[in-house]
Amino acid sequence: MAIKIQNITYSEHPVGMKHLAAYILIVVWLISTVFAFWWFMYRDIRAFDENPSQERDVRFNAEHLQDLLKQEISTTQTNEFILINFIAPGCSCNRFNISHVNALEERFRGQVRVEHLTPQGSEKAFKLKKLNKAATVTRARLISEQEIPGSPAAAILNKQGELLYFGPYSDGAMCGQGNNIVERALTKLSNGESLESGLNTRAFGCYCDWR
Image 1 (cartoon, rainbow, N blue to C red):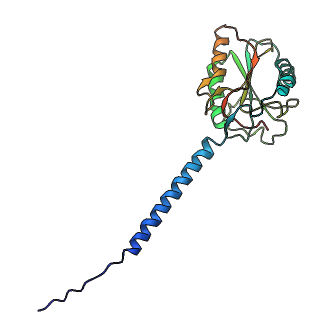
Image 2 (image 1 turned 180 degrees about the vertical axis):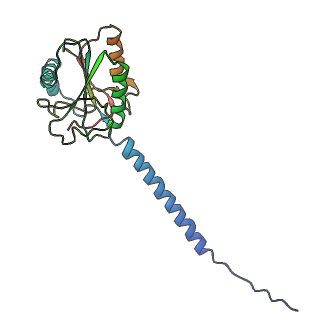
């Protein structure tokens, strides 16, 4: 019996189109992944003070800030230092800041009292998540967003209510990482060491406008 074998020609076009579609999907996925990573991790990476000026230094010096803070929160003399956390409720950097401040509060319990200060106009001021249950959140009445260059920011007052430090928590992409300025200052104070007072507006990390 004779068997007839036919030559079958396969078209490479559909296979090529499938490969092209797969490559396009991979490229789109990579771009989407990179964008999502940037959006959640690095979109707020900036200088703490994006508009440094002599005018700000003249208008907002340490003595002026100290007077305002004494009117914003209770600075009645206690046996504790006061750490004031300037926090903008809608800031994506809070996911780093809040856990860091909670850790500082736990570490220096009995030596440092933590106060959270939010902008006056913030509607979400009392909806901050993951703060310690006993945390007090106060809306600033006298300190405006024009006077606070970035958030999160910290102020440290001594036991007499005198300002020792104002500025960023650290210099780095994540709060508490890199050059951890505030933790180092609190460690010195808890060990009985002195701390020179001053304002610090030079740092690069995750910051938002305080509003």
